[in-house]
Image 1 (cartoon, helix red, strand yellow):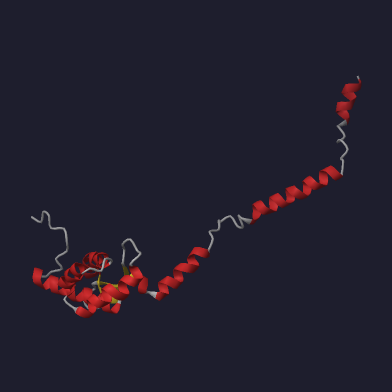
Image 2 (image 1 turned 135 degrees about the horizontal axis):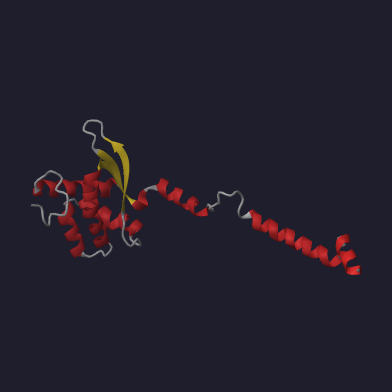
Length: 179
């Protein structure tokens, strides 16, 4: 039975899985973006994000804990330096997984995992998206109320300047009143 076995073992023994995740995390921190399978990326996300959270507070203890996970001095320097400089204010969600399709040999689902604030193309796309407005399908929904208000304003201005005569009633009504 598999009770209590929550994480994906990735078809590897514990030592192999630990070494693989450590190497992938080091590559992600140094290169800011790596291409891998979706299952490995999801496990790597669980492995890297606590490290980034720990790196927000630059203490000797936190550096040693991060080093026990990564085992690479350049990755530690990059993590506590340039990575935290960009994502230090973010309250979580430091990585992004983008699906890229399926691998040709074994049809495994491939993806790109990247550090969020290092993708310049996504940052540029996010800013213009805020400027766009939503439009209704019924045509120019925003301009119709403005036209109605403008028409009402012109008719209200014309009414006081032009007194109108009461409308004439039908002849049948006047004949019945006379009798």
